[in-house]
Image 1: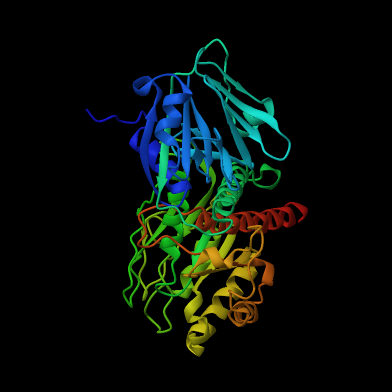
Image 2: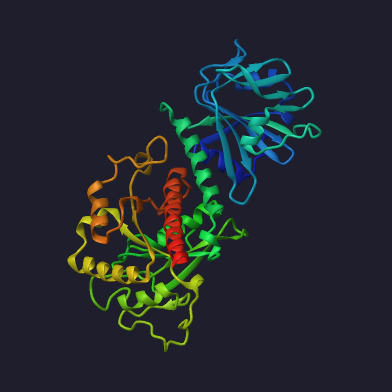
Length: 441
């Protein structure tokens, strides 16, 4: 009879994605193969990179080690890239990681995970008593609580198959996950300046096919924990989006709405009478256009329209305009399109609304981000394209944001998430500047 893991499918996918969409093969399960390290060692030695998973009450945590165990030395060889982890069992299945170079000491009844440079015990697993001792600092970092009154429920060891054999790869992806989770926490904790509004409205404007709807889908996917396609996207020469949509973002499937909304509009077209009508822009900015309003390129909305919002409040207004461009087409914008953008920007400036530019369809986001995940690698992003946007719209370089939306992928990528969440943070800062100026006025 085959031995199966205690991990659910979603939990196993979380581990696999953390390590780069690898495969996990179960080598040892304590409830089946015996509660002792001898049997564990017999099954796991010389198996290459392994993941030890510990189940305790409502917590799932453990350690990944790139080195492999040796039967003779009773230790792990080359534990260069290793990290402790915990799985937060919320709707988005978030993974917490702590990167530490660790070694393991194995006796008949215990496993001791130590920091190799300090020889300090961080995690001790006793097979005789099923008890776990975990350092307080590690408990805090992983957000787990191991009550000694509740013994360990299960211990499993997996061989990791298909992992990249690149120097620093594990260290990079785990740090990327940590930085992504930090950005996620910042976005969740955001509150508009002086609580002037409970939710901010960010309007996405750009040429047909620039990636406006895809950006909304990408943002929603991050907070759902899986890829979603609520907004219809396409590659047609005419706009797929024909309705004005005001999308709220929920934190998880049944979670609370986050303090921002993304407003998706019809695509801009260089031809007159095609795409979003420029005369609609002032009404959208002032909050007069309702959700699901059907655009008409030849006939802009007027106060006589039955759904026109005649007395919008500050909460109904647009607080930030994000001009969305395909980074690969920036050098090919026609004079007519540039003239239309200038006309739109004049309306935005008249309303005093914050402005940013969002460059989409960046390839190889893992090469765009530097090792610290805080700055863009200038060599990988065309400075001429960024400067061109700055020149066209008069937007500071610091507010020209680069992202790679989710398109045909089937799995989430922490590096893409970093770019998207970083862009959101910059938009929030732009809105807060706008709200502060509004309060001063």
